[in-house]
Length: 106
Image (cartoon, rainbow, N blue to C red; front, side, top):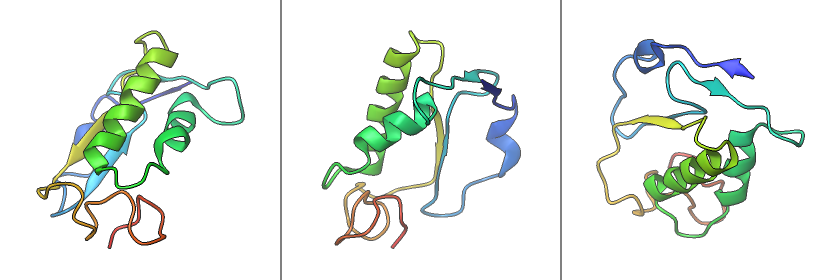
């Protein structure tokens, strides 16, 4: 388990336009290790990351719900975002664009 900084929200300052920061846990929480070679968060991210045409906000909500369920609510993921689009415009706000990794910015 690794603690997440209490002031993680300010670590990067304000997000630049069209950026999305995702944290494994809310500030002050513990990130749980999981039962495989990956932590709980990484496992949840890998479970959902290849979902086709999935808006980034939806992906991270799915990850958050999976992590919360896997840890009995002891770990809640957290994001800081400046995305403004609909989330599936295939210009970087999309999780998946024409054969690229869904987190790659376009």
